[in-house]
Length: 487
Image (cartoon, rainbow, N blue to C red):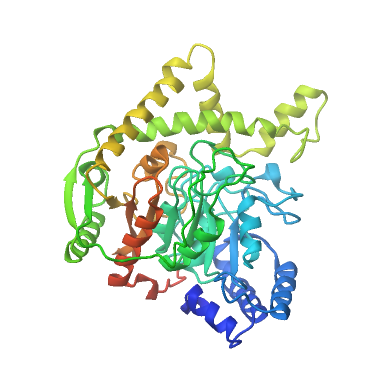
């Protein structure tokens, strides 16, 4: 069967009623992947043998009727640690790394009966906005194989858009779930910082990194978010907030809700046709009874440089562990200990990772710390204060997810500054640690456009509610990508 057409809720009913088996579902998933992925390159490692074994076990004991994810195949971004399954972070540095434990999110998914079908391609160490920095090759956008899928969770978004899997986990540091969701015409949500444990996620920028979900439908992501959320004693930044059943609690009533649209989100640098699509989406919210006002977030213009100083500084600290000694790639042509460090890192890391490590090391260095890192931290506080002030009067902030649609592979990779600006609309939500999602809003020049919906801290349910309300009006999930172009 082609389960691409169905929701997790529908598949769950079919599994419980024994219209299909988990084994059939998993085997069909691998058929999808084997038929499609040669064009997309979304997967680095498949988990076929273990996934089929797990599915057969579930069929023997019976699908849990009270758990939506029981027997459901899900794919995992390759910077999320998976026991006994290669985890590369898209890098030569970890090309052959096989972890001995699972990330907390994996433990939670497994306990709910979800089946891991494989690890997804990504920008190296989650550093990139186009999935062109992976050691394992470019990922292709299913809507046009000549175009990028966005990044860094490009494999997570492309695999869902192409119908290889029904849902996937990604990570979002500055927009790395929402931007590829927009480029691929799928739903992607970054929850509130602390809602989901980061333990077992290969760190890029610890104060910004978050695990997120990509799916065709809002309720599918809500079911996965319910599973992976909650306090984790192994992660001191995880929150003690109670976890609601997000999918069961979805309420699409937008009557009386107040939406703020920052004029900076609809300003210079944002494609005019994208603005038209977003304006049309906002009109739909007005028809649902919401009010829409234009507001200003003047410090948002500083979000991109602030983000790259903070994220790169944290990355320079987090990536110190990859030194050629403890685990990962080790250069062979070495004569002394300094050679081991220098050559292993020089040969193991790609250009974009090196660029950010050098930027971060410079920003933290003696004599420059106050001028760069400290100043960036202060600007982050100003941005967060502006956002907090808006949320005293409004329920949501909305606007485009990205300033353009997906661009051609190879067209921007040699221009780092232009690439960094792709995240200018998504970064503020990471800075503030608040929930944000991208939902497909339409098409421009045959490529998807995303509407970004940002909510108050720990109002993940509210973001899902608004997303579901809009999904019911446009039903973009009924559209299928063409898989045209050259892969």
